Image (cartoon, rainbow, N blue to C red; front, top):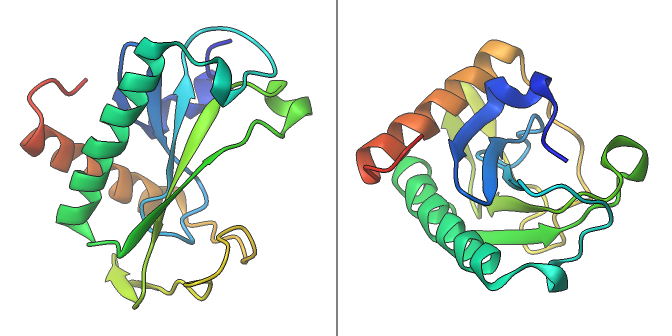
Length: 152
């Protein structure tokens, strides 16, 4: 299963086995997810190939560096979910959830991680206007371009 065309505008970077997307919920500034490129349903983390695992590690390292240069997260949470069975039938993807001990202001918006020190999911959604999402996307893409020559 490949990703749906409506998500193409949110691509941050394409890799061989994954595509990294900006998540549309930016309660955690810079939240993203890596979508497994190979087709399948109910894909478990334990079923990733060594090549996919190595690439996922590389994505995490690169993304931490990019976000570190942009917004200096204090920590990073990761989640391999696949629970939205109706939407994508458990297709494999990993969420990258930056965590912030103190507020970050970007684009005139103050992002406050009120869940600092707690599990990340229990929070209100933050649905930004598309132009703000694209501005965050563009900042991340630009930082990828500065840091890594092999971007998209």
